[in-house]
Each structure stands twice: as C-alpha cells, then as structure tokens.
Length: 432
Image (cartoon, rainbow, N blue to C red; front, side):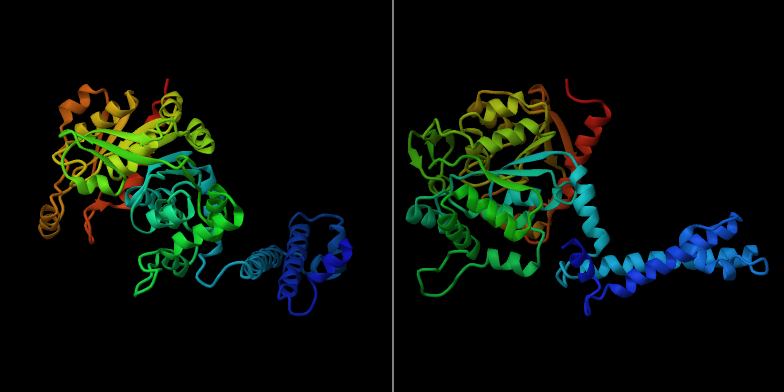
C-alpha cells in the first residue's frame, strides 16, 4: 500500500515528475562536483556512473568542477521551488498570497505574543485587523449583551446570544478571500422579513441550529473564514444591560441606553451572576498582553468586565494590561468624558484598579469630519494627564487616528503602538 501511494506521485498529469527528476539531476551534479573538488579517490556511490566523464584526469580542473557545482545548486533550487509551488497551488486560491507569505504567517506569527482583546462592536474589530499582522496567538473576548438590530431580532427569535459583534470580530480576523468577507457583512434590503439582517448573522444562527451550541457555531464559522486566532463570547448566559441614570431613571437594554439621554450613574448586568465563558478565563490566564477597548464604554467594553470571574482573572494575570481610550466621546454614554473619566468609570464598576497603561490619541482630525461629529454631539476625548498619573496608570500617547471616513482608530497604528508597549516592557523584564 505504501508503494502504491509513492507511485501515485508519478502518475500522468501530477505535474511534479519533471521537478523531482530535476532535483535528482541537481543532487547528482552536486555530488559529482564535490567529488572532483575534494579529489576523492573514490566518489560517492550514486555518482560512480559519471566517474569516467567528470573525474577523468583531463576534466578535473577547478573551472569545470565549479561549473558542475553551480549547475547542481541551480537544478536543486529550481526543482525544489517549482515542486513546492506545484503542490501549494492545489491548496491555495488564485487570490492567495505567495508561498513565502503563507509560511511567514503560519510559522512566524505563531511565535508572536499571546494577546487577549476585550470589547465589542467596531472598536474591537479595528484592534483585531491590525494586531493579527503581528501574532496569531490572539483571542477576542466579545460582549453578548447586544439587543438591537439584526442581532436583537435573532436573539429573541432563536433564544441565543446575539451574533453581531461576534461576526464583526470573525470577519476582522479572517484570512480568506475579500468576497467571503463582503458576503458575511452583506445586509439584506427590500420589503422582506430578511431586511436588516446580515448574512453573517444568519450563517452563525444556522450553524448554531446545526451544531446545537453557540460556542460550537462560532468555532465552526471560524474554520470557514480561516481566521487567525480565535473569537470567544464573554459569557454563554442570556444577559442584558440595565443602566441607572443620575436623574433616577432605569433603562433596560443595550440598544436603549444610548438613546435614553442623560448621564449613566451605574451599569448592571442581568443576571448579575452570569458566569464568564471558561475558555475566555483560560485565555486571560495565559495572556502576555490584555487589551481592553476601544469601543463604546458602557455597551461594548463594560459588559465583558461585569461577567462573574472576569475581573478576578484579569487582576490575577501577569499580563500587561492596556486600556485603549476612545478617540471621540459618545452621545448618551460618555458625554463630556475625559480619558481619566473613562478609567474611573471602569474602576468604579469593577471595584478594582488593575490597569498598567492607557493608550490615548494625540492627532487631530480634519475639520470637515470633526464638524460632522459635533453635529452628533461627539467631541475629542480630552487627555487629562495629571489625573491619570495620580491613578497610577502610565500614559502612552500616539497618533492612532484614521481619517478616511470616520474618526476612529487606524488598525495598523493601534497595533504598532501596542506592540511597542510590549517590547519596551519586555526589554525591562517581566512584570513582578
């Protein structure tokens, strides 16, 4: 049976025989050249047939031997390169990267730092898009408190965690064709019950029905998209958000909180004892870097931290803990908030002071974009350095802004800033 499998490589149409033969010719030339160069009294067994030609007294001269060696190396290099390319072409799509890029991604990125990102929405997906170019040891822990839009409808109809933020993170980590990414982000239009639903949300929902588990559905979708790293829900419980406003009102539902207006005094997770997903806690335990944010403070970041066991795991972790502060305030959530206000809100709700660094943006956006944000009552987050330093958090300032269409974090700038923090900390030694 083993012999039959070996012989299959030489079947017609396999397109590898020629390159194997070229490799063998290169090996023979290389062995012959070395035999002549070293003036061996008896050449290697596999070149004896060439002894009379290449090792005759008339032809064993340095130029001839060097030519034979050169031809052998060329044949080996060309044969090996074409052989690998021929095999690789069977498994890679036409839009796939070159073989050297794939090898780099699979080998080098596996040696990157173990990073955990905690959040949801567009903020966390921006982080993932950039950081996946530096490491594949990446875990995204995503909120499951969403109650609006397509996710809210599917959550209600199928009694499952909302898939929207999970979908965004899966797409951000995808290592597949752009068409597949566009497909997962496509939203149905027109007068039908599918209007407003994204294909990705429906796909995860269908996968959940097939696998009988939301966690299994996420894992299966990860394989379909060939993601780098992994995406985990912060909890598998049916959780929702409740906000007590400073004017006494109580607002229920993630989608309703920003629309209520006013200032949030206290955010709660219902039920309050909803356990964190065990795999998420294990990822935090093994992490070298924990990145919290960016994203909506109360509706994307905070819900993860309020699940039972999450803060304890973060506090006990020896990882570097970084909070990525939002670039702009968010109407209905963080009106008039400075960078220290964001940190203080996290500390107040978690009853813990655990951050090592806060990463803040220092660049200014174009006036025309800033004006659009002002119309939506969103303004740049002020960096009050003195208050932050009194909290014992180290400030890291950098140009993090993307100004293409929105004033958001630019993925690569954000990833480079985080890796710099890690390398500097690593240079000083591990955390005590």
